[in-house]
Image (cartoon, rainbow, N blue to C red; front, side, top):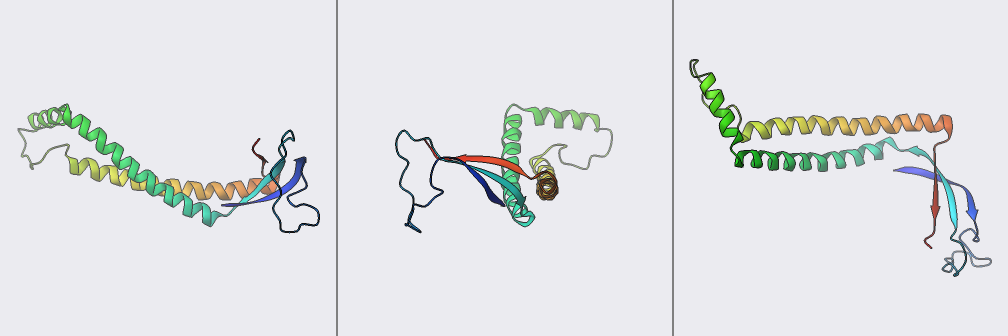
Length: 153
């Protein structure tokens, strides 16, 4: 997703390795000692990895959107809202030649919801990728976002 560089360790510890023991993991923190902290800077987000992640999230959000529309449609259908609206529409256009069908149907609702969801998903993925480019340019100017990581107590 991005690269991070270690700026400086803030507190305690030996920097990850013990003397003379190259490659061995450090022993667990001793009780009473404060946890080690490291200050990191997020310098750059790879736009390609941001796009891939955004597309995966967009697909998930698309399906969540369709489920939400389905639940809302089912609830409104259960209380008879669509029947009333379709009845009112039929009464208003009864003098004209009616092409058949209802004003609001499950096919129309889900079709429109699918189109709106697909457009939103595409815009979401594009916006995230453009955001990565904007962040990279901004981070070059001001140095990025600083994050402090710490061991658990």
